[in-house]
Length: 228
Image 1 (tube, rainbow, N blue to C red):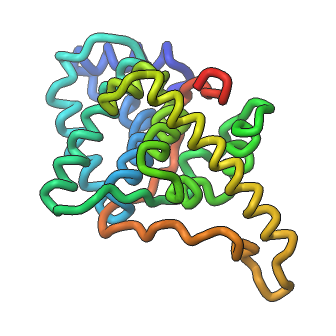
Image 2 (cartoon, rainbow, N blue to C red; image 1 turned 90 degrees about the vertical axis):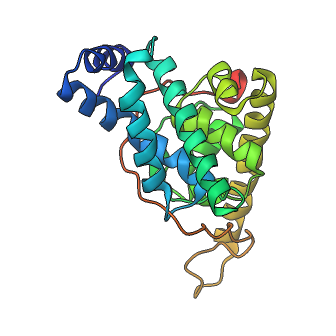
Image 3 (spheres, rainbow, N blue to C red; image 1 turned 45 degrees about the vertical axis):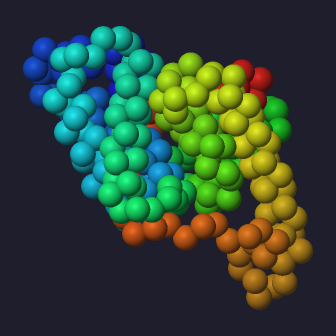
């Protein structure tokens, strides 16, 4: 796993020069969180297929890319989103948020309300709670916090203005904090036979047929509520 953005930038450039080991390193660093984003669009069962299509295009067009690690993550996210939307159009379905909490595991957090929520979500039902957000908020949160894009790169990926993405991410994180509070209250009040303690939280949308699990992390800087 690449340790920082400088290493990812160097690996991308080496991959552009044809070094297969460098491309594998880039894939290992970027793929897990990219897959988590794709799941917010197509659901669990089909995400791996869409991710494979995205990586085929990334490999094919890599020599045209110009930029550092942040730009590469944004570029890869745009390709992934386009492939996901093509997939949705072919299936005639709406986007579906789904997945598990692994994309957020181990992430630190700042001491603001949304940051505390994300810290707690890192060991809990992160993607299940994100599934309860409106689609624009879910995408903004995943791109900013999971994929690690700044507002400008996330906005370019979504075809929106940076201010709109900041607002959606801010509202999404605020709502996640509220959902987490309800979930924690439910856990305290749950009867002894109720192992979930989640009765007060509505069930997340069922993932549509399609995709795979994600395990690794990229080393992008954490976005706090303040700079959303």
